[in-house]
Length: 277
Image (cartoon, rainbow, N blue to C red):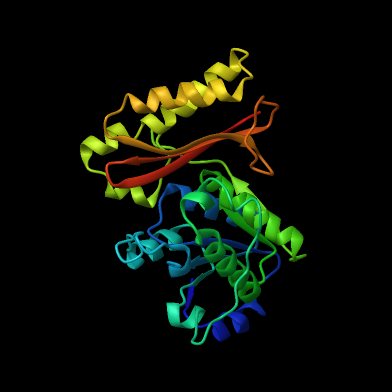
């Protein structure tokens, strides 16, 4: 496994990699969700590149960039076990040399949900992903369904800008009690960790009501809100039932529909979603 921290070095190595090349972009502190992406990439490509870069431009002023969990040695050990060929680990200065002044923004689908709650977030996500795609030139890039809006935004960018790669989305990996695995779960104390399962419970309630024939999106949202509000440690940011491509909120559910939510458990903001098929 080769570890590269310079863009020029990554470009030189890229010319020697066997085709096709699978890329798994990450911010490190890897968990089973990340490793599921790596396993899929490994199964489908002779060459697998994993990037580790905590991207400052997708964090807001009051968000957790400085405290975001990091454990490079552990990450590299895990990636070695999965047979990763290359780990690209650039510094912030390498990715955003002064004076850096170019940005990519995707309209409309970034204006709601996470985009409304975290202004500027997706500008950072799309810009860093575009840079990674340009540097590494993957055949396929792999993203997790847990960040459903991110996947929608990246697919839109790739299509609109005629980027020569495929985006593959992998199902959310969950803990035994249903909580979606996330690096931010490490912020939860034991009481908060127990309370956090309310996100999955709310999604499961929507799935249950849908399976029983409920098609009124407002009713699904209200039932989910009622359930989450019963958890004293939970504070709702948003609960959404939306079109899977436009992310427009639905009045009536015509599958597929994206049911998503963002909830703070204590001081930790968690997101999750399911797709009603």
